[in-house]
Image (cartoon, rainbow, N blue to C red; front, side, top):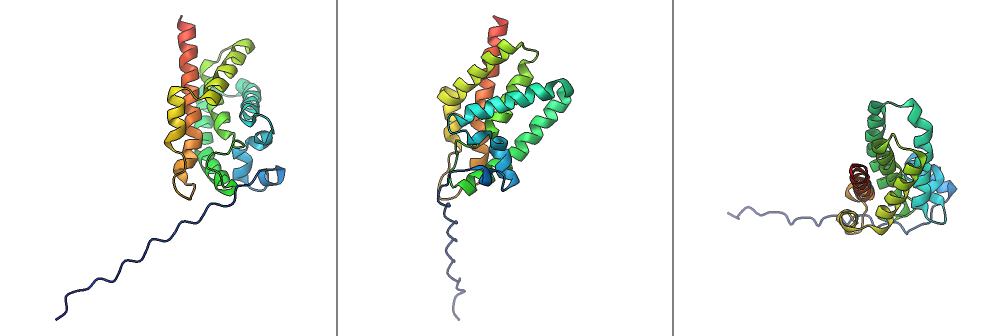
Length: 188
C-alpha cells in the first residue's frame, strides 16, 4: 500500500510588477478620485517643491475652515482624512509606479492640519513659523522622521497598504516633532 503522497506545492504566484513610473499631470490627477485626493487636488503637480505647495494648500484650507469647525469636527475631519488618505496614497502610488512619489502631498496636508489644529489659537506670524518648522522636519528628515520614512519603504515589486501608510507616517512624525518643538517654545 503506497504511503499517502502529497501533491507538489504550487509555486506562489509572482506579484504583478510595478507599472513603469509615470509623471502625473492634470489628466492623471483628476482621472480618479484617489489621485485627486493624494495629489492635494492639483497642488502636488507643482514643478518646484510639491510638498511645500501641498502644505500651503493645507494652510489655506485650514484658514478657510477654522472659523466653522469645532475641535470635535476637526478631530473627525483629521481621522477621516487619514483613513481616506491611506487609501488614496496607496492607489495613487501604485498607479504612478513609485513607492513615495513627491507629487503625493496628502500626507503633508493632513499632517499640517494636525499641527495647525493643535497650535491654534496662533497669530499668522506664529502659523508661518510653524509652517517653516514643519517643512524643515519634513524635508530634512532629522532623527525620528528619517526612521519613520525608512520604516515602510517598498520592499519587493509591489506597492501595498504598508507603503501607503508609510507615505503618511513620516509626515505624522514630522508633525509630532513640530508640535513638540512649539510646546517647548511656548513653555520656555
